[in-house]
Image (cartoon, rainbow, N blue to C red; front, side, top):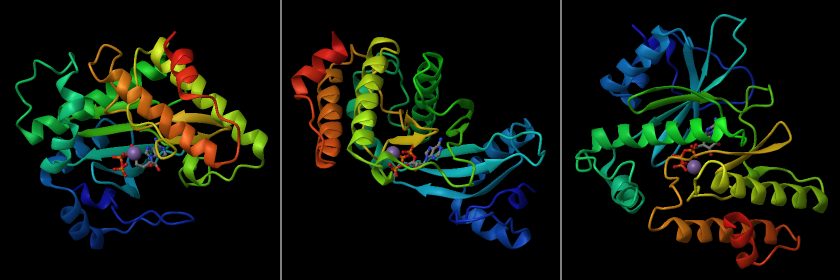
Length: 261
Ligand code: ATP
Ligand code: MN
């Protein structure tokens, strides 16, 4: 009965059309019955009314666009649905192993339970980051492996651009966002006690003239045995991207001290 409220087709430019009935078959192909049940719970909670299309299909998760039928509710939602694929979890093992928040979990062999733990981890990290006022999508709700957060958009129905796709006006603007990124990493470390651990031009978005951090499911606390290695990787990714944009970058070591000291 919820299939009519869920459209899983790729997101297109312009206003999204909601197809009724005909959509049901596609929805059931993309979303398994369990996932549909959790979506139904979210829709029943009245946080949002429907899913309008797919923003992104990744190897670890798909992200959908959600809205409320009541025009008074102006918020748009990004609904991230984690996949239960085993392959992905092999890759994630090194993040989970050293995380004392997850270390005692007996569920590590069970992909269904793992996606849930993983989604919860992203939700908790988002809450922490949002509370510290470091720009990130506002977290709204988590039901098992389905996470609902604020949709970052400039109001045209499209997602705000990733740093990778952003059209920088000039070198000055590149430099401004480079510095914002470094400050963001420092605040993540100092205020949120987190290392992003997958930070790059793909996992940051320019929204409302500010740099936003997304995709924080793999973020770890500084006492994770690999945390400082992850941090060095993040710094390298950031320097590689901004360096290619033609600005002067800081040496990785000075950035490392700036963030951790
Ligand atoms: P992938 O496997 O493709 O990297 P992922 O599992 O890493 O996907 P995310 O990086 O969290 O998932 O999201 C995928 C894409 O969806 C992002 O690159 C971004 O373009 C878009 N997106 C995610 N969250 C939001 C949001 N809150 N607002 C707007 N767009 C978003
Ligand atoms: Mn990502």
